[in-house]
Amino acid sequence: MPGHRHRAAPDPAGPPDAAAAAAARAREPVDPDVDLRQAGRQSSQGRRRRGDAPVLAVIAVGGAAGASARYLIGQAWPTPAGALPFSTLAINILGCALIGVLMVLITDVRNSRPLLRPFLGTGVLGGFTTFSTYAVDIQRLVAGAHPATALLYLTITPVGALLAVWATATTTRRLVNWRIE
Image (cartoon, rainbow, N blue to C red):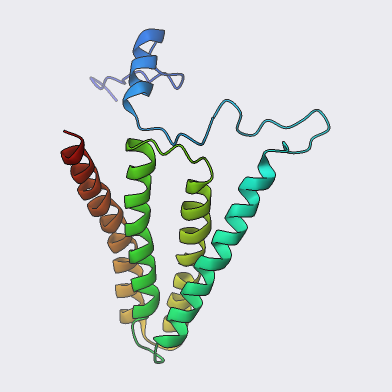
């Protein structure tokens, strides 16, 4: 196009200055129990490291606890046909709110327990939140001729989940910083 200037695409490797790149990485919170230099490395035989067994065990136990809690809430608070699935909505928003609190505590307070995040974050809260049920609920609402309810649910679940993470992470960060100062 005449007179149109194309900008050069940003370098995917990051800033050319190594010090600037290191400074940029240092500003971001890092989950202390995840070492990206070790992530994905396997032994020469293609097997995972021995240290993975405790992590997988706590994720499994936490996942069973979270999924059981989700199941019991769903049984106690069933959704009538064609209605907005409030129990699944509440579970997903509550789980995301708790993830916001957990991640601030893990990254800002620097918890020294390396199995806490996999147990609570991936296990309990991963098993508790249920975005697969969210998708099935939408499918059932559409199939049951309730497209307006399906669209409402399709919209409010991710918006509510993202707002819950943002609100609880922001509030938790402020409370933690206030307490430290």
